[in-house]
Length: 208
Image 1 (tube, helix red, strand yellow):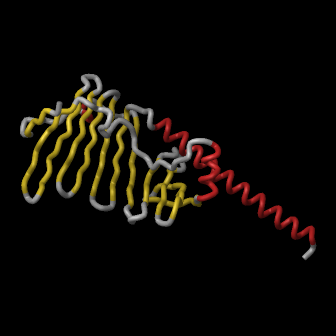
Image 2 (image 1 turned 90 degrees about the vertical axis):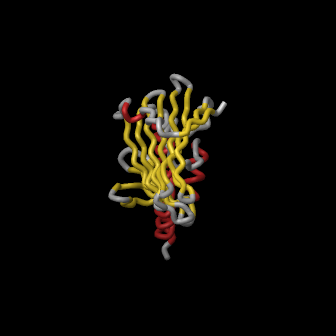
Image 3 (image 1 turned 120 degrees about the vertical axis):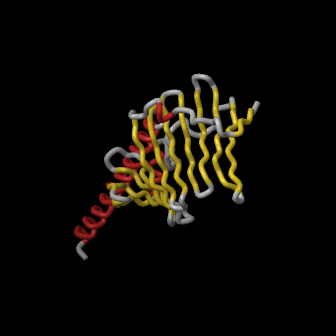
């Protein structure tokens, strides 16, 4: 083969590799940047639909949030009010056919869920880590439940789906074949959405 042609082919391969690496690095950077910004928003609703019949929802309006986990055995709520520094862990579940309705009052709010939106953490937060992840992952365009996404393959059967329009995490498929569909909305939450549920029929537990 002519040396000039061989050099040209090698040059094209190198340019294509660098271009693809730069593209993947930018997508990872943009996702990390946008999700950090989204995580600072204090008015949002997020829903997780998990393939094993579990649904998780979070509402937050300023300093009040409500986290709800629904499964086949019932519902669990976490209510947080930073204005009054009060939290509630509320259970309305069935265990071995027995109904349990309890509400535990807590004062330590920091370890309770519901403060910010949840998303799949890629572990890349600077240019070196972006490039390293771009080297070790593959990124392609996919349609995920009707949403045009970037599909980031981190390992076998471990995928993160990123909405191409707003860089929100819209889905996750992990190693145990669990698929998680994520829906997020911002700045439309009302006081009613984050109101403390009626606890009159619940056993009240004080946790000091």
